[in-house]
Length: 95
Image 1 (cartoon, helix red, strand yellow):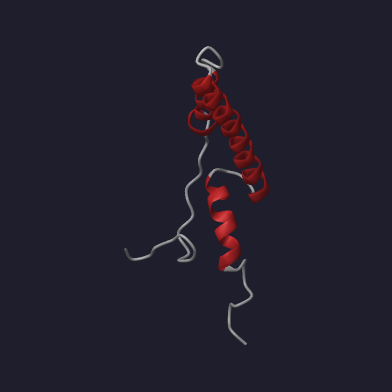
Image 2 (spheres, rainbow, N blue to C red):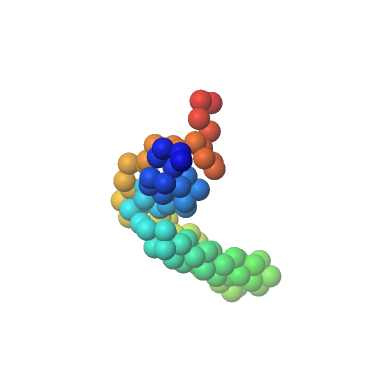
């Protein structure tokens, strides 16, 4: 019917896997990492909020979480070359 229409994953599904592949993860691994970061940031948010109310409490908790996240995300990252944009969801071609 349409040549090549059913070959390879549809562009919509690629939108879910392109970025995780650039950091060497599957979609599920990337989701787990992202949710782990979200949990760490939530804990840091609560600690910083409470530190604002009670300056004697949680004096280093927020900054400790920031250092931890930096180590996990930036210092120990092993990136792979990014795939070429497919022109779908988040990719602006020709701009």
